Amino acid sequence: MRVLAAVLALLVAAPAPAGILVEGELAGRPVRVELGERRDRALVTLGGERRLVELAAPPPPPAGFRLAPWSAGPVIAGYGSTYNVLTRDAAICAEVLSAPWMTPFLRPAVTALALLQAREPGLAPVARDGCGPLPFTLLAGNGWPLFAGGKDAPLFATTRLSFGHPTPTELRAAAPAP
Image: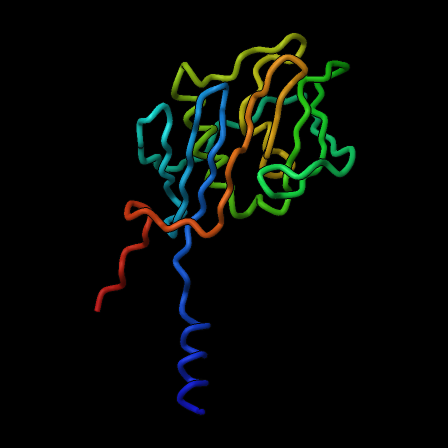
């Protein structure tokens, strides 16, 4: 019995290397973000091209916006959401259905997508009437944006989210030296 208890204690104490997978559409393009043990990088697949993104500080969101929670939102991709309205002065710029509790887990995904928006002209946020461009960091101001968009088109939509995704080799922490 003591042996069984010791084995169970070791299994519970051992870290479970699980990654995070987010799939969705950003500006109408399919995007896949994989996170792992290494919090300084993310593996992003965009347009069928897989790339390792070294994470750095993303560009700050533009000033003058307000992302205000209004009510509980619907379930999206299996997760509950909070309904938020993004405004700039009197203009309603977007509606965002977010999951605030996901922020600490998905901050690297927010950073990766913000960096790609800043680097890739095809992903740069399009200016919206009375609002200007709405970068991803702005949409993620109250948690992971499960869905964000305006009355005319979606800006981002989460289609799949898994917190038990196998960690890709590129995102595994280096093994400690013996």
